Amino acid sequence: MGMGFVCAMEAALAAGDPAAAEIVACECVTLAELTDHGNWELIGECAAKLTGAEGKALKEAYKEVEEQEDEHYYHSKGWLRELSLQALGLKAVLPPPEERKHVKTAIGAARAEQERKQMR
Ligand SMILES: [Fe+2]
Image 1: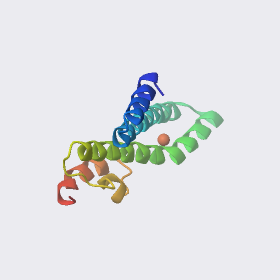
Image 2: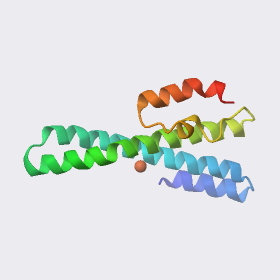
Image 3: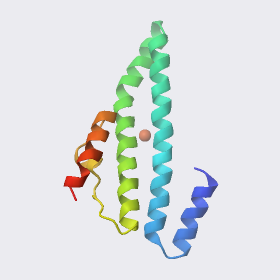
């Protein structure tokens, strides 16, 4: 993870602001999951083009991991949004709608965000 994030987290902890440190940590996780999510999408594209044993192996790996990675990304993004809203003194939905509704797809994530106003 980037040094900027680590410094921001340490600064928040040193300043006695654990809520800010938690948000920075959540940003780190969300950014890592975004990268993960993007990489698995690329792996899926490669798997679709590959043939033979390699293609088969990559397709199987993609099928197994892709949904989990989507879930990681949407859930961490949801946590980041809600923790940030809470820090701003605004109404937050905790745990986030993505977590409550076990979101696994982009459509599910969009729906959860739409419905969050009714959850507060
Ligand atoms: Fe992940």
